[in-house]
Amino acid sequence: MDELEKNEMLGDLYAYYGSLLTKSQQDYFEDYYYNDLSLGEIALNHQVSRQAVYDNLRRCRSLLTKYEDKLHMQRDYNMIEDKLLKVTTALQKDKSDLALQITTNLLNQLRGE
Image 1 (cartoon, rainbow, N blue to C red):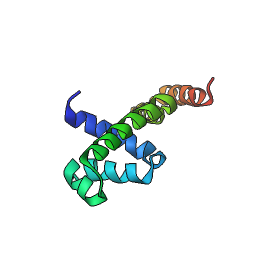
Image 2 (image 1 turned 135 degrees about the vertical axis):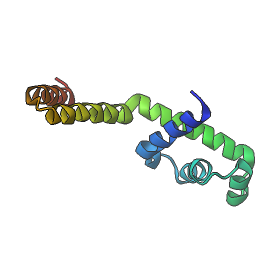
Image 3 (image 1 turned 45 degrees about the vertical axis):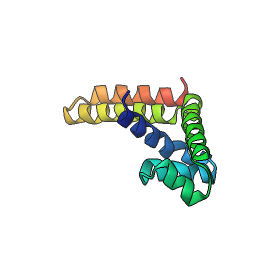
């Protein structure tokens, strides 16, 4: 996975779990990944060392990944989106039986059956 893909994945995880981070972690993350500030610029803005910013960002990445490993919100969202796309495609092709089967399977999966 290249750096761009990693950053995109982290941005997606942040959308799900960012509110679980501390306010300073959120600020550092947003400054670095969304506002494209350097470690030095962030350190200057927050009156901390570059090392503190680096450590905080590393901790953020670790926490976001850990949250997804435990809660699976992104994985589940992607799975639901994929199945709904299949339902839409089946309905567009007048395959209502297939759409009903996919929908029933999705509902059973969401219920844990």
